[in-house]
Length: 294
Image 1 (tube, rainbow, N blue to C red):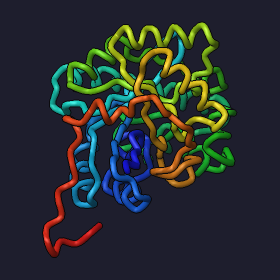
Image 2: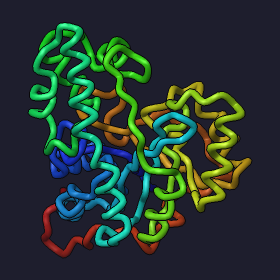
Image 3: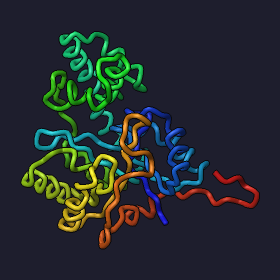
Image 4: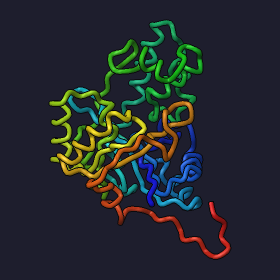
């Protein structure tokens, strides 16, 4: 039986742990097929793949690409991508390019609200300035005592339209899917309930996604509430999409769900996304006689 977690993050983007530490936690929780999907970067994948092999897990390369669609930030996960594909690497570099400037602008807004040092404070949690995200600002706000939790930091300061929010123009949906498909991967709409689209806009997103070659949608994800799952089972059926799943793990204390854990619903009649990726899965090495088990 496959226990897949195809959405997780490391310190290569906005996660709390190294790729090796994330892999160890996934294996410890019984995950058999794992993907690391850091935001707009492939930097953590070589370490992640090596750790997965050592721990006896099948592995898929992955990335979560930031897209601007209908005025909102939408995330598209690419699974099974060629990590050396030039067009994908160039596209991700372009997408990351505005992160540092945006975080400085948000830090300036926080300073105007009486919270100094946010940029430098956030940077201590990031691997580099170009990896900076709102999650890192939220970590600073919590650790500095300005907010009681990560969610409170977003609700008060960082979420769309809040006091310190600065909009960002990310990649176009069609471009992101072209990079993923050109790199041999499968494109997945990540946690669609998070975008709070009305029915018309959501139908448009799914229509445009399929038209651009998208093949799957996350249904069982740590970023969905249990009551939201049935709606996305229906949409997957309507648009002929495979289903994907994952915890969206960032780190203990930052998430509702640990690696390998997410709300469940029957997906009978839907194809699992790993069926589309059999040639892209890196299998765990076969254990030889006397070899230690993870």
